[in-house]
Image 1 (cartoon, one colour):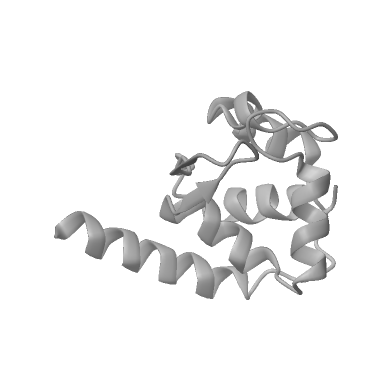
Image 2 (cartoon, rainbow, N blue to C red; image 1 turned 60 degrees about the horizontal axis):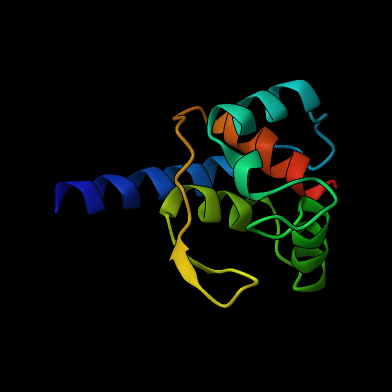
Length: 114
């Protein structure tokens, strides 16, 4: 129960803090890639090709089409929601291992900029 509460509080805080980030904020490509590599994001995703998961270009296009933004991307990376893979299977999305809202925001903006 404590874990769910902690995740909810953390997610809510990140959602609120994400709204404070200016839309025009610079993306630190190197920091985003470093965080992605540390969390094995590139095991399932690549910038421009489908692996186990969709490419970041495909993710960015989907978010743009559905008018979703940084806050939704952060929720996806921090809540461990189920994701449906291209092969039809489902699994829990890995939760990014960082408590730094700026790092999460930077990674989300990097993905959405692809």
